[in-house]
Image (cartoon, rainbow, N blue to C red):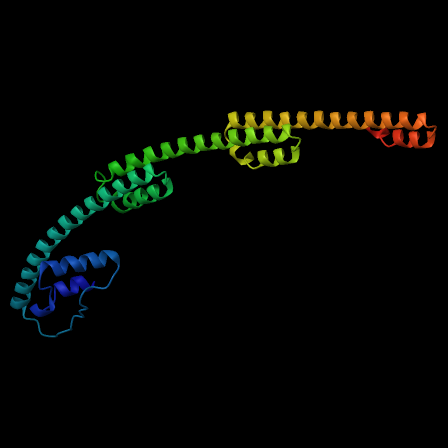
Length: 239
């Protein structure tokens, strides 16, 4: 790689001048970025082994020191990143933003679980707590929505607005999946709406028949028998 080629460069000026430069190149390589300085080794037919061995030895010393520093820096950086992610996730949980909180925890667990398994234990534990809390929150929210819909449907049905009552129940039908208690609540309310509609229709039909009978009686008293029969025929289907 470019980093290794520059480490083993023949000329000192072509190598990393400071451990910090090597650390930066290692970070860049890990991120898939190009190094600070591109270096292309030149081919040479003459080999000065004494100079080459000395240069390699010096380079290895610098590389070892830089690698140790890089690992220390990486470990410290990982601890900071994980700590910040856990802190942010806790705050997002307070705000009920479970999706973003889970995304943050999933990211640091994926990034550091292989190299720093101990470091991400708190993040993994918090993710488990998040999933439990999120499920409990969803269940509470679903129950609240269904109860609200049931109350509104009953109110609409008592006012004779049965189509609106059914639409209100239909809005929360998806929440009954996997929740038998909510499914039973919705089913009971739908039965109540149906009974209310039937009672409303029966009362309406009775009122129309009684009105037609009164009108037919009045017309008969005036010997308008044809009109009286027509008034009764108009409600014959309501019997």
